[in-house]
Figure 1 (cartoon, rainbow, N blue to C red):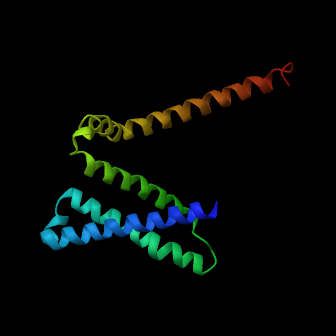
Figure 2 (figure 1 turned 180 degrees about the vertical axis):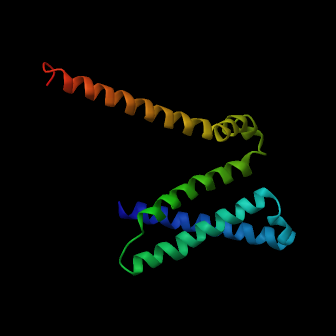
Length: 143
């Protein structure tokens, strides 16, 4: 569905343009000290890298015929997730969101634990797969 993809791409450009406008308005209102806080620095990093990827690197890679390199696409997807975290961070002051914020905050704080759990799980599965392969190849009835 080409129309749906075009709409989503236009929406993506519009949202990024809104983020750039928001960042410029914040800079105009508070000056450069708005980047002194961790949230301000995170917003600047997020908006600038997203703008560079969406408006510079991806169009340049399409123009030269190589299409978007695979690693740029992964970085772009990661930045989308980080932008969602930014939006969730902005909405946390709303009344309805206050009850959901502890859940989101807990998920964000447990990402490291989930990654290490996944790593341990992969290692354990690999060890048991090697052991099962050794048992199956040693038994002539199972071959």
